[in-house]
Length: 241
Figure 1 (spheres, rainbow, N blue to C red):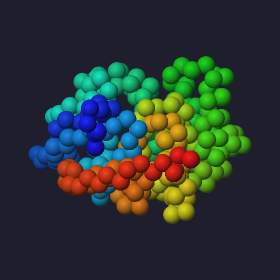
Figure 2: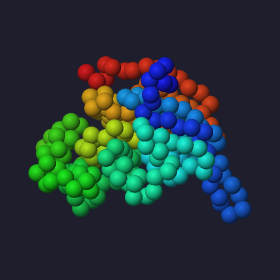
Figure 3: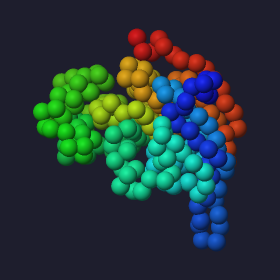
Figure 4: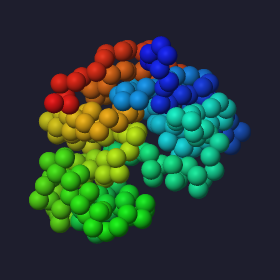
């Protein structure tokens, strides 16, 4: 996945993750090694329990590998303590979730600006960035609506705007359209691809759906904790226009 002489943004070296459940050991990731280039869109495609979400959690620093190394740039994610990895995520990573995870009592604008609040960004700058992020996902004029006043697709757009507002280097999307109908799924995926290209981000997408995977440059099929197939599709630059 990495061009010759190019240094990858993400380097995963022989990571393994084993969970203990009573007396049993469950191997979630067996022995995964790969490089992901800056600006690349990669989808991990697999069924429930295949290890795809575990991989995402490892790279995002939400869990530690049992064995192996994970580097983002020159940062050894596997070695960071909880405080260090939290600060790294705040500055470098955005998340889009299947279940939206919006705060019901907050408006769309307030939800979007949460990451900037954690960074300590001044209020006027937060609001300006939040409004721009909502506009970028087609929700200009929705700033004061609460989640209960929006459709599922609109709520997911708020979630996308929240993930984008801090201009992260890497965007993680875990089954981002799992709760949406087919028409809304296409709209949401096109928004994600367009904004990833526009901002020059790297996208790591997790899905069980082949039609979602096909939005990516590279599809990695994962099964029983191992990558069993790699399909390089190339950039879809038309989505960035």
